Image (cartoon, rainbow, N blue to C red; front, side, top):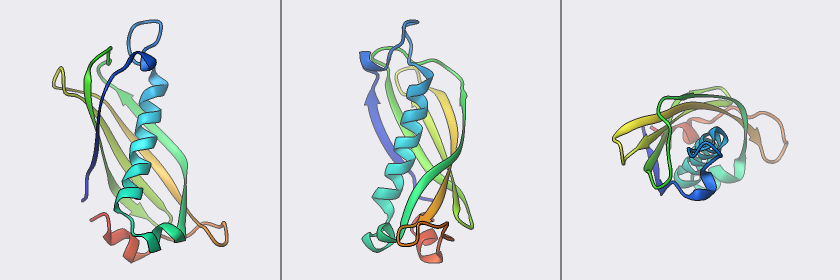
Length: 129
């Protein structure tokens, strides 16, 4: 399993009126990071075959994030099933050494040429093992 990580510091633009990170930011980070994982690992040939859409997402919030917290966002593909990838995303607060949120983002593969669902090939699957 190949893990992809992004590090960032919580900036003021992510903070809501309650002085912690707005829940929508967690979702944006989870989708962005899980999408970047594909971009980082996939070959150009594979990238030209697929386009991805989010069909489902679940996120569990454990501990809030506040201004200047250092976080690490990690993602990996937990399972590939036909045309779907189930990508896990963990948002870890490095400042407080605790897990802040965990999400599962289900991405659906679309064939770029036909614009129809596309089964994920063994070649594409092997890139994430």
